[in-house]
Length: 292
Length: 294
Image 1: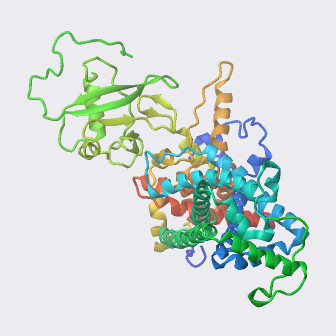
Image 2: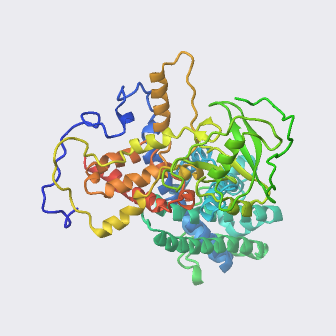
């Protein structure tokens, strides 16, 4: 260590193997053969560290970042149908680029995160019954909410995204964002499942944010972990409020009025006329089919 | 093994001829005769004494060698040595939780469950017999991360680098590890590996196969913490890269699931999660170095 090195010469370690000479190192390290006839390790095994770190990162970027944008965008429905519609229009202004962007930055990272997540869940042995500590409860909940999130997201995408059209889903119409979403979640059981799904996803993200900081060594001391935990709790509460707020906003939406607003906005776009009033920044969107 | 029921034909019950304790201590123990064999419960009852610990209960059971219903049985086998929570050899599952039998006081256990004390062997290591388990994987993990200062030779290196008091204070808690295995027992990411030797398999081949199984799975919090202890040591840190290489290989630090049970059950209160987070940071830097410095 610089600064505390004593006057004496630095120790020079001769290049000897731990198995030569004095055998005060544990002898099992020196048993023969040095490299036992091991079976070839797979690509996954050799790159386990890298894969798990990419798994951890993918939970934050891009999956977590997308989640934050998604939930905050949805919450804009609380500002009225026009407010939500203008944000949806902004996303769909990507036009033909939307599908590649969705695949590259949402679907593939999400599928990777889910695949490694299933592997992690399968290899763990939750023991919250014997050790009911807060951290252990969170460890277990992280896995439970991850599984719920995976099932919920598959259902959610099929129900609303145009990908689900062949199986009777695809109910979200980006030109009629609020009204089509409100109709889709109208049944009470659908809203209830959405509430469970959203809260699971939000817990998984907020708790994952905290564990990510430990995994990457961003917060290391118990005090730093407590502070980071407080931040994670706030992030979780804000996102939970946004997610549940969006559900509440959709449930209390006047669908007919929203549809009228959306039709008017669509006409404005089709006439390629700059819409008047507060939605003047809305860009005309491509009409190449429905996106998310 | 005298397992067959041998009921006493005289002096049924406790026949000590002295006034029995008002509240004898009742214990149930999960026993197993041989490695890989079937396990079974047996119940015992010993007179209560002030300040008893689980080891003294086990000693009385060994002296008695009788179950509660009077059957004569082989004494329960268990490991212990120092009886002061330093040697780390008497770890058991007591009332469902991993702890040292020597520091598990009977009166406190009875406060948890006044009816009976439950004792089981550790569940993450293969049982050798009764409460004795084979913890060689724990020590193999320490070998994997080279948890030592590599100065084993016959040369005089002169005085080593000085360690500042701050560094000493930081390192000392990590040096208190007694290799008891409580952190491994409570860790949901550390799962049992129990192999048995094949009929045609030589002892050396079996050992190699077992070594391979150990090395492919999670090293555990104790080894991560020891790696951080020796990496922080001026001389031990000379092979810091080798330890980080071990910690980022298969079964390394990435297997940690952040349940933080390790730090909650550690009898020596070692800041294991701090070590894990520090190892995570060192592994991050190490991985970047490996990627761009070669």
